[in-house]
Image 1 (spheres, helix red, strand yellow):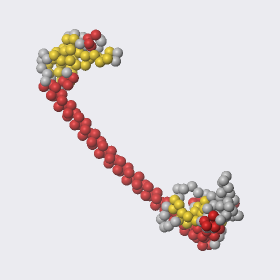
Image 2 (cartoon, one colour):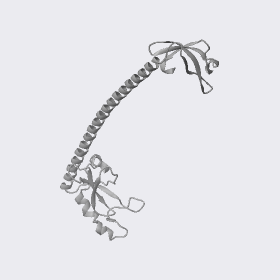
Image 3 (cartoon, helix red, strand yellow):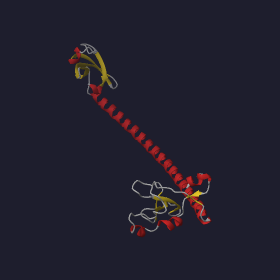
Image 4 (cartoon, helix red, strand yellow):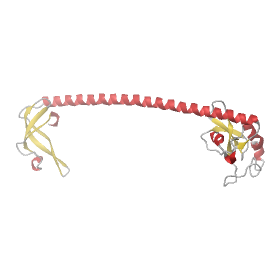
Length: 229
């Protein structure tokens, strides 16, 4: 409809879509169409525009109902007038002139379509805002849950480390992971030298890591979290 109002084809500014009444006057009924071979509702009116010899369906001016998302169309092959949602791609054939009532119907229905589309656009914008707010609220909840989980994990780790420190004492023999050599994780034998707040120090006395050159030589002292021993 908007394209029809803006059309200036052949220097004329009164192009419009045909009304339902105008299309019904020439398209014929489905029952009448079925009696013809090939099935063509108005073969003398419109030439075929498709490779299969069919004329196709064309949009009309009128909406199916007030504030409806559907508009009427005329089926020039199967016959009859029906309605369908506007997102469907159909043909358009503009006409000019006609009775004043037809032109007035076009202007009235065009305004209704514009109003319906504007209302639909506002509804989509409102829905987009609501979706954004819902997503933001969900993100805040997820962030709170992640922070709570991180705090719980840190508390559990601190508790495990405190328990591990309580099992250590000076002179206790321990083993802990050393360096990695050719994809193999080596280990270190050591003796606990002292236990502090959450950490302990150990002096190396052996293990496979002493040969890797990663600082685990005999007599070296290493400070680690208690859970590593």
